[in-house]
Image (cartoon, rainbow, N blue to C red; front, top):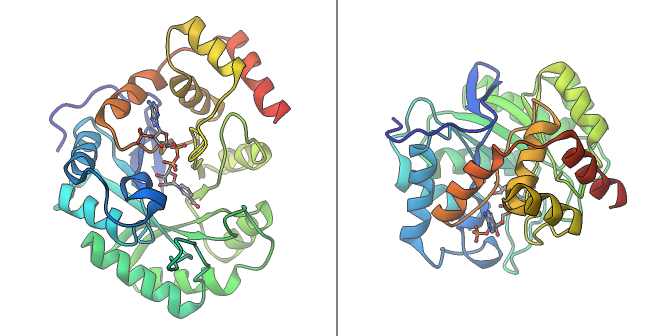
Length: 292
Ligand SMILES: NC(=O)c1ccc[n+]([C@@H]2O[C@H](COP(=O)([O-])OP(=O)(O)OC[C@H]3O[C@@H](n4cnc5c(N)ncnc54)[C@H](OP(=O)(O)O)[C@@H]3O)[C@@H](O)[C@H]2O)c1
């Protein structure tokens, strides 16, 4: 139950019958460096998660591969028993090797194990949304998802998953998944400077399906652009705020999952994402993606 709910920019969106705030929280960066091992500031990580929910955020994005296990265990420690309004979206399809790499793990046995691992670490009976993560670290790769996605459909039929999505997927893979079973979201890399999915976003919006950009702030390489800085300076805010406000304005089906390990950045991002962008601001910002 939120005790300190503030106005969250963007309002809400429906993932099936689940209502989530469009301003969500991405938990990946709570793990240690390279998304491996425990966080440097464990109490700080727990505080960010509690603050996110206290401020009214009802959508947290995670994966058991973060840490591995670390991020899910932090979420459980900070927030279990979960408020009924909170929806945790997780993903399966990659595991971690000893070098911190993300090799694919999409055979049926891998996926069954991953779903059970997520249920255990998050201490849930059923996962609200599970994304099948495809491709590799360089981005989406072509190829059929039928066997892997079919395995998740079976797990959903067993009552272990409420809704499915895909991540790091090509438009063809999104269509292939939809031909097998309904999806509620697509989670791909997208931000002001990386706009390969523009057409996909519009198509999904027409179908009422969420598009959840990962790396909304640039991820490990923060967004940097003179046009972005100029708009932020003109509006008296930060480039991060403008980047988030632009995403909220880009399409109503876009849900934000910016990551941060800092309560100060979390509150700054919530306040900043509500900044009003003029038509001229948007025209300037649109040039960044066109150039990139
Ligand atoms: N499906 C996939 O394959 C995939 C891949 C990557 C990520 N994801 C998901 O997407 C989420 C978001 O991605 P991300 O966290 O990697 O990238 P991001 O949201 O683009 O950026 C996070 C980075 O921005 C910094 N930051 C945030 N707010 C800031 C502010 N106000 N001022 C200065 N710095 C700020 C954070 O540092 P501080 O901690 O210092 O604030 C952090 O280093 C992840 O949490 C994860 O859930 C999914």
